[in-house]
Length: 226
Image 1 (spheres, rainbow, N blue to C red):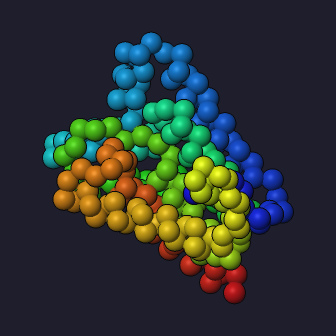
Image 2: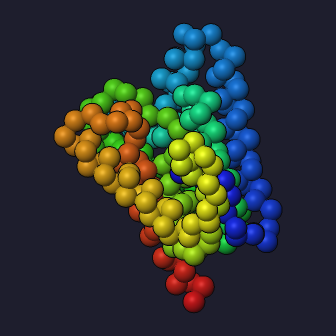
């Protein structure tokens, strides 16, 4: 099930959405030209590592805590592979323009960054001692999807299905497409509590936390427009 586009035109240009996408592409291009050992060091330095955050809290070091909080934000702009980057940026382009149109450029940027922060903390609460580095924009994008889910539940998502390798195009209401996506995140998140699952290394709880924060923001926005 591959989303191609949403049939939900926006009135204003999504400047911030485009800027975020450009920054992510630039960072990935920079990673790609680094020698492999430096790429690993780059990801370890700018990615968010829950174990390091736990150590900083246990030591009560303000500087150390601050440095780890900064990595929460820098990690949102780092991706581990081309497909990781493309899938995230496509989802941001798909849902970000309408949300930015609704809330305004500056507020959208703040919501995006804070969604990523909430997502990282959600992941941390379930993985406080893991030394696996967390990178990617998916937690922040999950927040954008949560807002879209509330504000535009009946917008149509043009979706590609493969039935016996034959392409089938269907328009699916956003609440169904995003709803199924969220159910898959919840299912996998719960399974990780009992051990590794398919897609091991994916921050399921970051997606869940970011999405729930987006739902909260979306509900507040909807009330303000009633």
